[in-house]
Image (cartoon, rainbow, N blue to C red; front, side):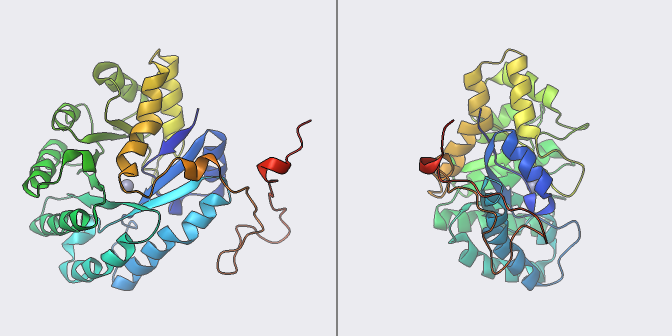
Length: 303
Ligand SMILES: [Zn+2]
């Protein structure tokens, strides 16, 4: 079975993770722009980060057979530095126009401050202007209140729910998010919060329509294999294969496919892996390592 992980911060993961993800069937991933664990101090840091999301990280993923896409946005925590946030708003349109950018995100609330709301609204308008889907990060504290408030604001901006993925849901929020017509995403955190056992129960209860599973794996304790593991657990627990395909592949494809930048054909017939490839003079290999060089499909000798 093939999987999409539509929320993973692979910049902070290792090549071992990429190899394990490809072996587990992860064919395509989306890396949302977010914060770095500490606040940035100048706009150049955002510019270089956004550039790496559309540039080097896409190249790096391809060296391991995974198609990489990203979302561009100012995260909620850093929206609280208004002087910097203004400069990021000026920078964003340039990056939203790049190939492989499939949404504006992840944006939304952290502490639910006035500044967070201001830059959420500005970025919602930006997404409307360029007709891109939106990825909403919901707060980890005051989850229910923050999630409902985010949806209210989106509705004030007259953005249709089918253009919006609301992420980091739990049992407390998902019913209302589904009821209002949004793509309803769940981040599977190992050991805490939303574990994959709980995800199985949610799909049993609500079915698979508009439900999306992701890992949000980053530099913290997280699991880059959360999507394939959850998919396999669903199958073990008797959830129909079609529901697993919807929640772990097809719904993400439909939601982000609305960007016009996220097409299955991109990863179903990929270029053969050639780790001799260079990105601005650099490869993913270090001295003495043997590059993986796959033969093009047509020339492969079947024995
Ligand atoms: Zn994230």
